[in-house]
Length: 235
Length: 294
Image (tube, rainbow over all chains, first blue to last red; front, side):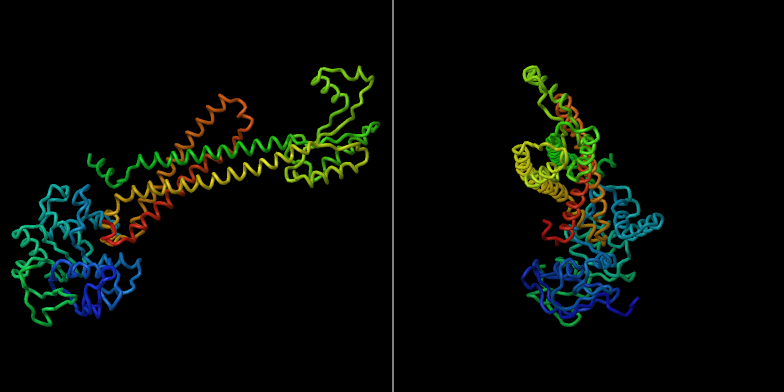
């Protein structure tokens, strides 16, 4: 594909929540295989930015190009195709508690157009190995720990080999040890060439895994690649 | 057990509740449909009994009489549906009938039979207006050998009046009822689907197409529609059977063909309303943003 094109390219975009502007005049790019943190206080527009990227929030001003799709004026029939190229991980998007891990993942594959059951099974073991949980296929989500559940969620996001993972607080409710484990999985995935955009509150996490940071504050997005800024403890 | 749990969650919405309310709604529609059929049959029978009495002149030959009969039969206004549109009543027959009804032997009294031979002509309902009947009356009166034409004017007018009134009444009720039923079914399914909104949401997030998400719901809704229609039809059939056993006269109004068409209609209405409601309810959730879902 367009190997040199950035995975995400945002030009002069503004993001609205209802009638209010949350973020103004955003400009940044995420290259293939890049790892980027997205920080900012609650209500600073992190989530809205992510939602705009997966076309859940309509983009009204500016241009966003992500994995080859233009978000501005995207047709509703095109949205599923866009989302298949993204890995979406966020708190409201949990596993289905009424079926096993394998069924959860199979369901996603069926919903996204997989038909060959041999290939589906192969892919299923592959992603579970990637998140280091080879033997939980037959378990129900509630039989797993919080960290394990989160890893399954990551595995689910990986199913369609996305070019970028969009993660909103993936370590939100987890203790530091487990968080570190999850972060290492993200790093591994990132090393194999998948870009990651991760929103987080955790100052500790940013300290432990230094990389490029985007900060949402007072309606603007600051980019650590472009300018230096202070990170406070309060996220 | 796992299987059961899955069904409960994915089949998710309260199947029994949906089927029961849709069934009841359809049953009411069915009852009403039956009422419409019966009133139509009643009107038809009343109209078939509206007959023009054509009295013939005395001293007609058999041939002349048959000519008149053929002429009457070939007229446009003569009913094509009625079993015997033109019936001959000879004056002897008329006298017998009269004596049987009154118990008074007027022939002995008068010394001869003063009655005339007559034809009873059933008129096509399309000609059941006062003006047309008047015209038909004068037309027949002009025929050779016809002595006099007579019909009960008041009866036709009151039938016409009542048919219009009943038609308005039934028509109004049908509209109200259909709207109610559609709203009821729509609401039931909408409530039921409310519990599925996060499942729908999750499917959207992984990149399932709208059709993939809608298909199982629509198939299920169609199934519930058929099931409800069948149960409602069965109830209708049982009720109608019982009623006709208890009230024998109802059989006069009962029309098997129309009744079965009605039952099939119930099933169709069930399916169509369920499918369309489901389609639109899901579409509503498909278009909602996450914040609106909560």
